[in-house]
Length: 211
Image (cartoon, rainbow, N blue to C red; front, side):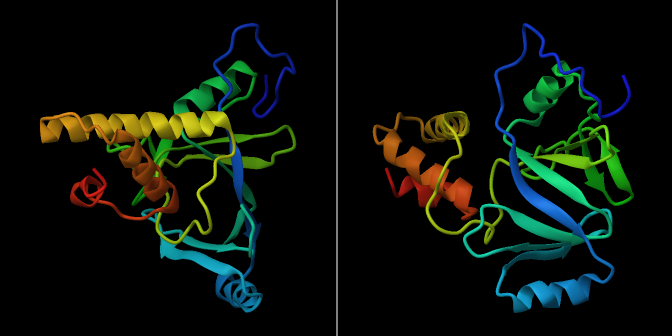
């Protein structure tokens, strides 16, 4: 089967459906600085303007009130943001899609395998559809500061469940370090999840104040 093509047949046994959020559309532009001025003048929020490890530039804007953003680059691309890239990749492969191996960006470009520390934004995979449209899967487990505004929301029960699992794992580490069980775990979970989704930096000492 050629790259990007799907058989159209879903196997009888496949992994639990994983959420894939279309959060970023990459717009091809001839001059990034000129495009940055244009979208800035529209009043769109500038989320980021930085140079990646591989030397490429990331400039991202979000329209007012929009759950999705745009990035400015030389070629079009669409970002699917997921909480577990390995499960999503397995699901797509089961559906007949030719998905790349998981990789991360290094100083000299693509490095096969996820970043060894598995940081948020540090695990990627790609696939194309039958017409050559490119998709990038990106694992995000904690938002960078300034990327989320408004109330904390979840797109589905699966996404909320994944957030609760991460909070439970972090809280278990907290109990282990403290040497006692936290009876106010619910408050701790809430604070952890909100800080994780909004990109607020938190420390063990800050979170422990909620106990």
